[in-house]
Length: 510
Ligand code: HEM
Image (tube, rainbow, N blue to C red):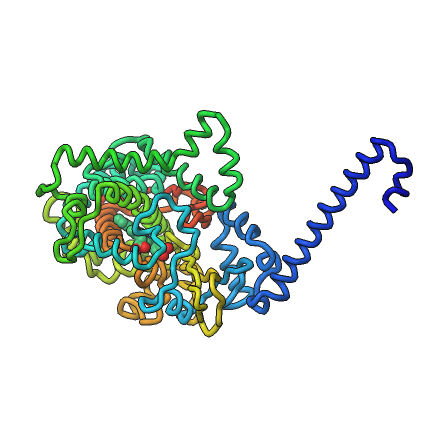
């Protein structure tokens, strides 16, 4: 039949015939694959009856492109509003939005393992470890560094950096000022002091240190590695210096951590009385009866901690001050509450004076609720024996998650969920059990945030010190547009800036 179609048997004809057969074969194979994928994913899949959009059921690339554009969290949030508490967001991935799901996925007794997505977050430390036993051992060896009593010893270091921030704000009083940049620099200097043994000096310079440029690029490279691995592989062969510099940004971050560690050893040795969390990490925890981390392990952990601590804390402070700027009555209530907390030395109150103040607590927790710095899914994998989440039986290897942005807006626990209203924490004496269970801003269970106490301490000291001295307002209505959410796992304001104006309270006569 094909011979007839092409007529004569010349060499050219044979070539055309071969080509035709090849194209025909490839097309048939593609159609076969497509039909198989459709049958497997829409008809045979155990998840086939789960509500969710058709493209998500067919291919994981759909969500990956949305993720790459920075719209993953807002898209999944809208899907929950449309489909309810259980939504299929990929061929083998389900997003949940309920208390039951949070308990089932993240509770201490039955934690599912972190998913493969965490392999794309740099080098393996406590944050990235997926194996439960490896992770348990690692936490045992580093938990002591994050205890409340150890952090209280570090308070003077944090207060010094807050003093530096106060100088920056003082110099820029009355003019529009990008708080996203300066709060990030504060968080960077604090974590540098505590874990690298020296501040980055970022608050003392108008330009960010080169580290920040490399860290921003490292986030991008890790996102490309995770979402578009073939693009990453292709670009890594390109012989252009600028591209190679970009692709190796992560190495810069880890080399920086390692260099800081060896400098520290040279200056202070392995046993010193120097006030720093690095000293404690090097010494290890005698009470836990486990060995201190090796030098290599310390280099990875401290490098990871710099980026785990800086953007999360910087962003939360930014959104908090953005909300205070829009809600002057909360600034006044805070100032009233802080009236009796005169700093003993310098301009920053003591942590003991402010740690349990209800208005201060409430404005911070409400910022973490409405604008969680890690708003996105925290993905986990169903183990080989299968699993059950919120009453739904799931096969092995299904990826399950909840996202803070959505569960922290669930009705009826959080009425008017998009409104910033710290009162909800005050009238419930710091939050009902349900409110606390739904708060996923610091994660949950055995994988919860190690730096929560440190972050709260830093945010309370900074907020108290700033609000005592300054009032704050939006620079213009455009700030509201700039602060619209995008995310690449962590929250990033769309405008990448937050312009606010600070004024001294005594000058304004407040
Ligand atoms: C407002 C500030 C912060 C927020 C909102 C935040 C949020 C989170 C969240 C949601 C997780 C869980 C991630 C997951 O399950 O995938 C996490 C884990 C973690 N955070 Fe934070 N974080 C903050 C500050 C810090 C600070 C200051 C540090 C350290 C100095 C830190 C270190 C870590 C570490 C090491 C983990 C991994 C814990 C583990 O898996 O064992 N974080 N954080």
